[in-house]
Image 1 (tube, helix red, strand yellow):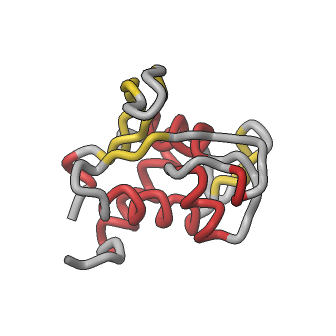
Image 2 (cartoon, one colour; image 1 turned 135 degrees about the vertical axis):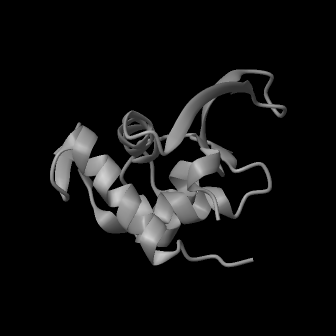
Length: 122
């Protein structure tokens, strides 16, 4: 399985985000939305069998963040910023991902997740 987003698909994703949010990079709720962040989110989600990860956004260092999209973004981008919920909302407005709700099997609590839409998978 190819792990990197195909170049053409990535350019389409950038265009979709810019159409709905503004010229990249831009700031949204204190987070820089960059091309690298969009690429990272798409690649992380596409590697999952069901193309979805729980957001588990936390204002915490990576070691104290539950496994999920936020922790994986932090690990990949070398940041401790809470990012998953914000970038998910931006990418949902662009039609690239869908923000969903599901039950965390470990806790029984409802959590937000991010799913890569079929048109954006490779």
